[in-house]
Image (cartoon, rainbow, N blue to C red):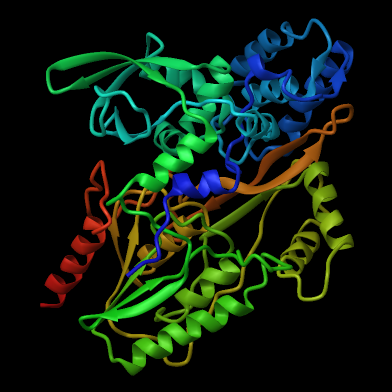
Length: 492
């Protein structure tokens, strides 16, 4: 049914493009521009001051006193000149403290990629966190006593709960559930910049009542590739767009809500996606299907200029992606928006929104909050009128979460699967400003986006019907099988 590919193999194939970590212990891998202590301190001061005025609500999760205390502590570490990589690590620790995913500094990934390219080794286990417990979900070690399904208790003698709390300083995340989702994809990377290069790792595992202590060898990039390719029988979801009819039920996997074609000049050009969606729903109407199952598991999201084209095919009334879109005005936001306006191109999907922003903040002062009103999207003239189900999981992100919340809140579809880790009501619409000396980009959320229902609680989308995701998903795709079974049972 699906052209399949593991997330791990995808990450490896693009030289671990999602990796953002850097080990302080590996900072000599490549030449890295250094800045004086005075320059670093000045940029750190600037970072805090500009976050205060640009961030929609910097103190929503942490008090100013807590921030001030951390700022003082981290600033005391700046004693000598620092490389850009070291600065990014330090500054990101401060930014991540606020527990908002859209406030972040990208940590350098080139160092890790170069390390791996030169034969460097990394942690050979991938995990899944279930009900607060950490389990081995994929095992690329060659240790005979280590196997998939074992509970991981400690790494290098440190309990995983304590270790993971410390790793939070490197990744901006709104809660543990989101962070654990990132860890499931990136744990070997985080361990690299936490511990530095290691030839082996000491792990403590449990299977039933038995506790196992094992020294496992780290793996090279090539060893990991080879062992991934040797894996058989595991579910490997891809980004491919496809549709088909299975025993009277339509199945649609729309793929990411952006243009990810290798030859794409503009990732926000939705013309090909529009053709795909039109073709899919014409096919479903022609086959007179009884119900439709839309699969957005492991969907990275994108933009509603894509997803609206899909939702309008089965919506029964006008809709929009948020009940409120409140924006905080700042000099940083104005500068970013004006730059977009200056560089706008014909048919650029972002132009109209930038113009809306510009019109909305005329006459306002920095610090003011204004609500941006988006027009309602009208359904197509002959919308699909059979039952629609949308399948989600913890790795449905960004606009995929927006879609799930949207169709759930408007009653357009029934949501099934696993609760999303990403949030439906969130601080987002990220902008950036650059620091004076280091030229480091700092991301900040300018908006508070409230899901269509008006629920202001920062939370993921909870399915109407929960499907428990197994620790190990086989290529028979048990979750999808259960989803089809649920649809059939409800039809009957």
